[in-house]
View 1: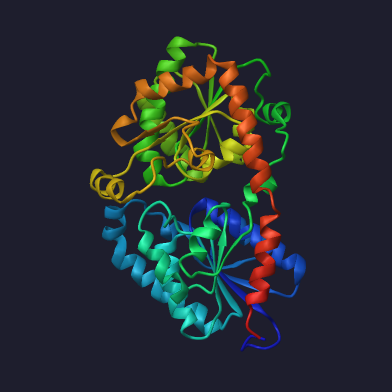
View 2: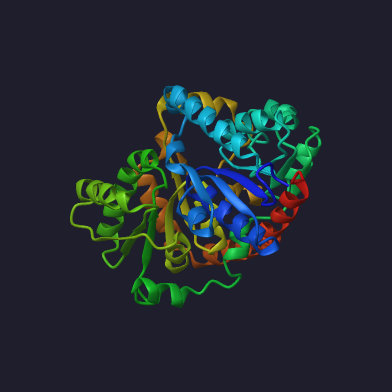
Length: 384
């Protein structure tokens, strides 16, 4: 039992929108097994709606890139120390870190030293870069939960207790996409060609990626006037930001902006323009062909590019073991390239069918009731 009495408490710290969704799924799965559990931590809207008391908001971790993180290090270190102290004072039965490894592993190490069991969900991409991190994970994490099938073997080989639980997105998204339903929700006619625009969930991503996507859409519109464009943003405040970028770089091209779940837009779309990240997997599971783009600070990219040990960075390509979707990174992310790759998808029905078949195979492989499996391990890890 927790030090505060008979109530058992789970502390969860997530970062950004994808981690917030994972945290919410975990809270719901844990509550289904033990309705008396209490949840505290760093939470976004999804986790709060699921019943987690927010000690801090995930927006406080909205930083990308090595250089940007270094600039924010004093603030992030103070935030981690303050959050760690508050969590430790509550004496949770278990601590669960979700993604954001550079923040969560330091937090987990401090809590583990105080006798609090630690679980981490979403393996750090040590198999892609900074492999030496894998050797030190057991110092701060008692149990690592893997989203991808090859990760468990990799981390076990480095002495880390790791279980492959599958990916919650594969559980949430139906095996047969309901395209007609999604189009009705978005009020898009079945025969209207639709381009989804998802330039990232962080403000920095939108600032770096959205202008190029907007210019590409302007070029697409000039070539195919019948095309419709709809963007999805993670938060209401980003709507104005994106609208301003669009007005500057795609003048005269109409853009719908929604805050609906990304999967609704992805399911409805013929092609998606997406920032590299979890949304690329979501697009794959929705069977949506995509053009993946990303740009970060030049110095951050210079450093990271030389540390990466795998040839591709988009999750669909990593899972397939080959290039199935185009990746346009840094200087390669140009309006002309995005336009060219989008048209290549639109003009090749056979390629789209092959992509959908691969996506269905990956979907089945990842669909393992991940939140329930993760919840079982978290409960097993709880100290009494």
